[in-house]
Amino acid sequence: MALRGRPKLNALPRSAAAAAEEVAPGKAPVAPSRQGKRQVAFFVDATTKRQLDRLGLDEGKRLQHLMTEALNLLFQSRGLARIAETKE
Image (cartoon, rainbow, N blue to C red; front, side):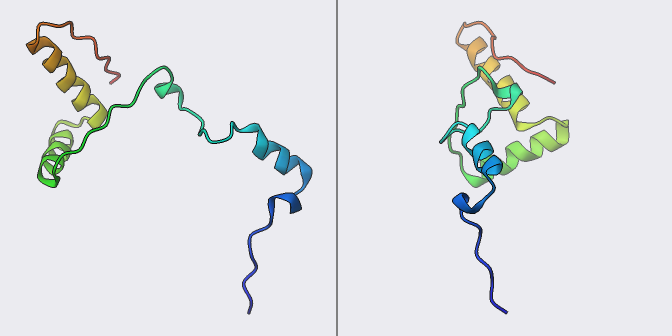
């Protein structure tokens, strides 16, 4: 039994091809909870990540909340305002 290939974009009905073009090329849609926000990423070793995951599980909090709390504590320790927003 031969496998059929995926259909070519130009072989799709016009309405489906037009819908595919409506999405901004090269950009995925942004979730409402992320609009107006910027991503901050950094790398940690596996042991640190496991401990952070365990802390989140133990406290019933998501990584987003833990990192926001960490940022606010960092700001406070430097004499800055605790401005990172937390949505619980």
